[in-house]
Length: 132
Image (cartoon, rainbow, N blue to C red; front, side, top):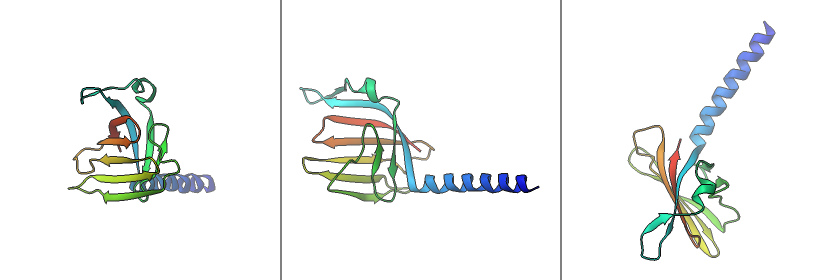
């Protein structure tokens, strides 16, 4: 009986933690990595092989990103520009000494996986994929 109660409490804890984590974060997966070509068009980056299929997590509270491809490591500031809802995208920006990083997640898309685009000005890549 006690074991069942402990297991039930553990299951409830895990379920409630996952629900809260989903409200506080987006979990994203990279599908494409582009770079600017000499003629003003986009081309697939050589880095796509390294980053395609990898993921990252973005805080819906602070806009900070944890992951290999688009982390917000040591920015001057990180700011959520738009929180995102059924009509607007989620948008956050990180300000660095030599550039900025912007991510936009189409929170308004009526599907579980939301498309995103990330751009690093001062870097060379445009990254796209899906977030939950």
